[in-house]
Image 1 (cartoon, rainbow, N blue to C red):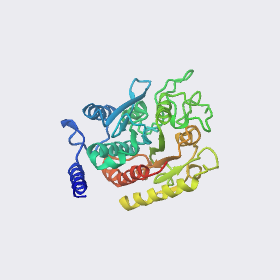
Image 2 (cartoon, one colour):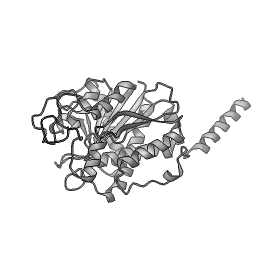
Image 3 (spheres, rainbow, N blue to C red):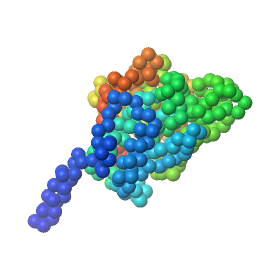
Image 4 (cartoon, helix red, strand yellow):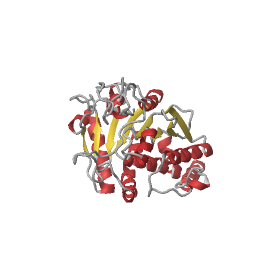
Length: 335
């Protein structure tokens, strides 16, 4: 008994020593800030270099390339890259003007890099995949040319207008919108775009049990601070609506306690405008993900999505506890 007790003490001391330690993070990334909006190149450089320094824990998955030949990258964080563990998948940037979603995803990713050893118990049960910029061409165009840009940069046959709204390009409820010059133009067919295919690639290739698409509040006052579950394109709900609501309500309470904001919880059709062809319903109806959600960040700025640099840090720090709650919850879930 004394031997086993000693081993237990040593294990506890080992875990205590590890607590708070980071992965092997290259020196240039020892300090990162959330006081500016990270361009795509900066995001990719960060994840590439951390992955290269930690091949057993971090893997970069290039799900597709955009029309302008930017990689659409996801990061898999794991304690064993060869294990087929359940996955929590976090995606941001389907609608590229939603910079709040991008920055929250980057902050969450940074948390798991910089405090990796705090999450060893979590990573024994699940893997975490984060796609911080799922529409890189659109995001860069939004950053440099048109702040309100909602599409990718696909060339449209027979039109001088550029771009498809990836937000409307998924299969459930898809229909071809007639005007390629409109911000909600859905494309020539469902899943025609590299960006929607990139998201689907992760949902298809991995054992995803929970999917979170991070977006930002829209132009209406009731958009923002929402936790939404299916369906958006039709006025029904999945069979496990009770579970979806209970978890969403618990997450809302965590967000409220951390940031003082109340998140509404409910089916997307109650709160969304024009939700045809969205990734939330695709995750549920096509890929059979048990716990799919869209999280709309708190409402900021004149147009909702128009967060400014001084608001980045308060936003990402107030939402981070919610994502820590998410991974801990699903690591303990008997799926």
